[in-house]
Image (cartoon, rainbow, N blue to C red; front, side, top):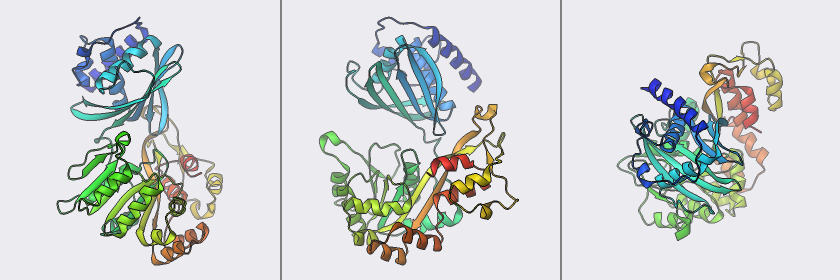
Length: 430
């Protein structure tokens, strides 16, 4: 089946490249079938088959995002694979309007509106499984740009024990999330896998004897047993207003997709102090920086000290292809660039590898991604330091004495295990 689909995809790519349309009209009847494999048959129009090919090819490539970008003379198609954007095809610019119109119809958007951004969702069946696609359309000078986030539960690991934490760190997380109250934060930049970690924690905690309420923007994955709310800013359904309502719903566990402002942070902290376990994410560079980010939001240090239980700061780095990785002759210097003692890591017994490139990884040297992280578990001593607003270096020193490894230290350990390259660690830890 897969070989046949790949053969069809190649034919459709070629057909798209040579097709020209002038003022093509979009018929609603074309969009009744949401089964992608059926849309690839010879009786479908080229636009139906073309979009089906884009979706199918992205899934087969393990892509997380699809970008359709209109330029003066072409429509560029790019996929984000293992965190990196890869150009797939450039096709005729005359196809752009028809492809974007098809996407709008499928996601119930206004087909005639081309002046303002629009957001929507599509649910499709691909290779026997249901996959969600989150759509964001934005006008540009040469036409509309479409960004499509692929939400495939089968592709994302949501088992806390399997997403990449070492045994000791997994036990730290488990002991913290089993508490009846307090706040646990997962931090990092966009694309660091924060939502996956948060949903993995929810899956771990999800049972019939707890009331779990979650507010997200957007709701990416539906979890049976969790009451999930979608933020709707245009009608005043914000994180803060929803969180206030949650407190009237007899919750045991509250999950906020993101703490974006001081008001939400204050309500979350107070909720955690009144007998609720609160889970959320925050955009910070490292775990200790989270403390000062909350202070900058206007949260008093004594409240942070009392409420905060655990901070997980993380990144996703590309995983080395096991078939073509090679020894990195500059390992010694690269570990030095990270500010670590090279002699601790390089004693002649280890070979830290970097990317090579073969047909199994599309000549990139990488296949898949793994998590690197640092975990700050707030002991009594660290809580006292937070309360008196000690500087970052003092808190970091105490945390390291208590066993915390920095993000870059965990990264180098992963490189020693030949799971990733030092180049990836350098890229993600500065």
